[in-house]
Length: 443
Image (tube, rainbow, N blue to C red; front, top):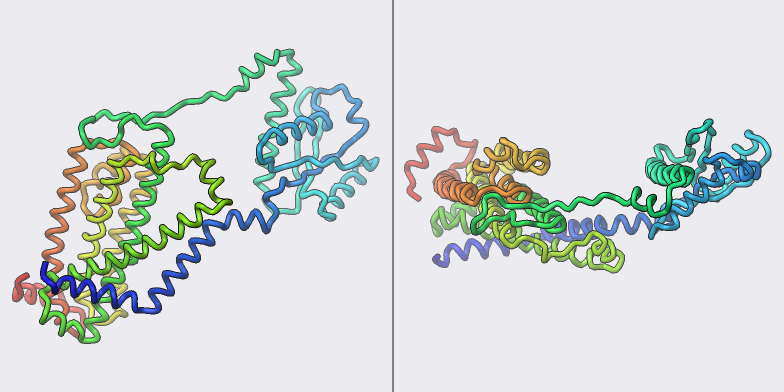
């Protein structure tokens, strides 16, 4: 490539990084990412959620003398034992002394909540030869977390009490309560070199799904943010008449792709900064423990999937970037840009939503298979198929070839539109005017 291409690239990159608004926006997003990653930790520190919630219950002396299977005292002991066995218990039962009457007991429990001794309390309504009705009361509206935790604990307690009452031995009880585990392994039925599904474990499948999420979101952000920047840059240069100088010294093809590549480098820098911020925050001591518990290992990522994902990311970016550049060249005012790029934005949104609401749930559906060959959707959809299923290698490469051919055709058309559009001022040109101008120029 000649120097003129790199001159446009350098001009685009320098012009962007010199803008204070761009740098401030990048810093603000980096700060927001840092806060978002550490938000769960901050919530636990400032809200006290790192300590178990105190739940009160009525400690009745008469209940202790009862011979019934499901007494309050017995269940409280078993529930506390259930939570003590956990590494990080989220609930602790606190006994509240019997006040002598139902009304006085209710008042004592409410007073304990008001004094901050307990966060809520649990009541048991006895049933003959059956598990009692349980009610959890607290000041919080829809205290779902505590209720769900107590439901799981009481279910375990109920099972424990029934098994002990039935005279089952400890060995039989352990065998009965032992969870059934099923290992899932992804297989490849297509085989051949370059196949993605090759007997993956659950951890490897989870990492592949995570990679699919990351690539889809990154591509969507690159198209929506960088594409808009490309179109707005071209429109701004056109409205300021700078374009008239550029177009006389640089061929339209080099000018357009120089700007696209320059914006790609700007976007890549943004992504690198955000990734660095994420990695730094995720490796902080309070987040490192969470990552270790999630069993996240980058070595489990399939290198074949990673190569395909990068390839579809790059081709998808350049396809949409050329369309944004073409549309930006025919708009004379930045106020009209939003409406002009709306069809391209909708195309990108359609591919994104097909994956998020269809592909991630059913990657082998007919909709996903068909759209994986449509070039405006395939950068999203084929990555989803590769990560969550095992499409034949020939289908993957047909999709890539269709995408590359589309980039060539769209790039050629975009260059002609760009060459004609940047010199047409005033109102947005009609299709007839644009076609006539395109015929007059050769790319």
